[in-house]
Length: 254
Ligand SMILES: NC(=O)c1ccc[n+]([C@@H]2O[C@H](COP(=O)([O-])OP(=O)(O)OC[C@H]3O[C@@H](n4cnc5c(N)ncnc54)[C@H](OP(=O)(O)O)[C@@H]3O)[C@@H](O)[C@H]2O)c1
Image 1 (cartoon, rainbow, N blue to C red):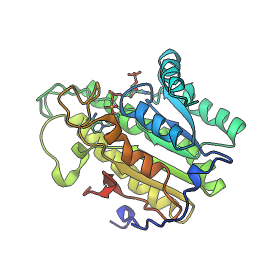
Image 2 (image 1 turned 120 degrees about the vertical axis):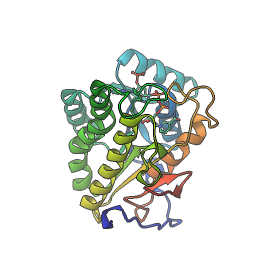
Image 3 (image 1 turned 30 degrees about the horizontal axis):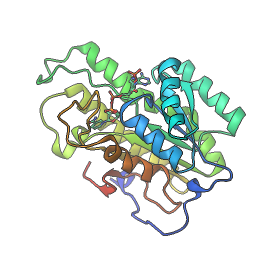
């Protein structure tokens, strides 16, 4: 389990990500709505240069306009995380324009299982599409952006996982989603182990049950509450944790 161990160091060292010159560049996937939108808002408010990833540029630009009304300048970028060429193109453009992406928030996700069903009730296509978005999307982005982070000696990767992906509490229902988030957690652990000592910190988080299109209207938590741990992990000091799984800024079991 060494790959999943994390350092809990949280020093009062000033946060380099909040430094105005030059701002760190953050990409949030699926940021046109829901928790991703709020993460983009909070990162922009913290002084980072934020790219709002969106499957369609129209929706991304609408999100950017909403943030502009709050005095926050973000840029919408077209990014379907299941499209390998779009991921590569974005990585190339970010390298040319900014030298690379410093902070990657893998937020985009889907929940396609039928409500209340077990393993037999979700169709094979639902498993494939869920893993394509929730696991292979983040993996693609890591493969495209991590080399630049390691070269520059700085990177923060935040993977939006879920309590439904906890192996220690694995239950029935939403099987494709659960499997995808457990696998995403494994990705977090292995990338964290690969990058130990490089300046790149890689963590998973659960936002809790949040009122969004995915979470539904009965969820108890606001997007602000759900996004807070992502903000913290995206702006960790250099001696912050890596290879951990967090909710409300506290470690939780895998
Ligand atoms: N809400 C909760 O209670 C909860 C709990 C635990 C974990 N989470 C996780 O938190 C993250 C955000 O959830 P949410 O509640 O904000 O979900 P949401 O309201 O359904 O929003 C999902 C976002 O992901 C985007 N997306 C989906 N597939 C994509 C793709 N292939 N490429 C790019 N973007 C894509 C959507 O874009 P479109 O607008 O184009 O569809 C949308 O912007 C997800 O990873 C989710 O699994 C949520």
